[in-house]
Image (cartoon, rainbow, N blue to C red; front, top):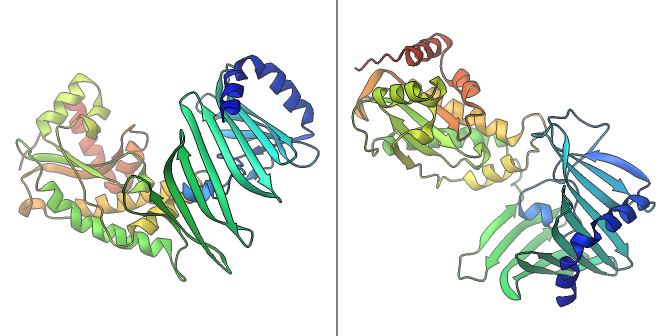
Length: 372
């Protein structure tokens, strides 16, 4: 381990040499979707990711993508990451060297600064250990197998046990992954194969019904100084289905619009009254898992399905009589909104009728208020 840490310390001086040697081994290049390829057992499954898929050609520059170079034996030699946010600019490079049963992978940012160094050791074609060093320390994983399938992963950080993953299989493949932490935390299911007949669309409708029922009593607990002009269902990543409800008065929203712009009147993070929604709902873990496993670049991605689910919740709540919950203005509206406001206008279009939405936008632009 000391040897690997010492090698990491030398990486900056070796960047150009490693780059040249890795590129010399490449015999063909392919474009892949994020997160690309990784040899570590259960690497993707434990974090609810799917390996990247090969593309026939480079996608538009606004799509993040990986360019992977393969050697004559079909092994990964170079992985370049290109950012869609930076119009296709390369943001990192990884150089992988194969030496018998030992594989070393060095990752650099686009300035040639080292980010990590990984060393994988194989026995009889199966990875038995992965040592990973960064400037913040060392993580080690060891793998145990039964009939050629990984059944246990022991994880340590800086020499101290951190977690253990137990994987169950049957004749059809992976059944579940359970993580047992070493800090007296309860065991957590990281992945579980959906039961026979599982239908994600049906499961999403069940979650939708549960959220429609849970949100009004949550809103009723908000400490709002006056009639509510709106309730925002705020989220960071839609597919996690973690929601915080925010509410604001008409005066609060008008002040935000006057100080910043009309979009600020919809920005939930700027509203003072807020509280999380209890999402301890039967079946929600499986729905979250299957939404996460929908690749972001595929039609019907998990992000899009979850966004539509939240819009459907808001649309139903907009037809609700709120008089038994809290005082509201004549223009009261419920809508979902992401923290960055990236999907704000699409969400509003999907959960508020066009004529009403046009009225709300004009009212906010002019700074008017109406209270019931």
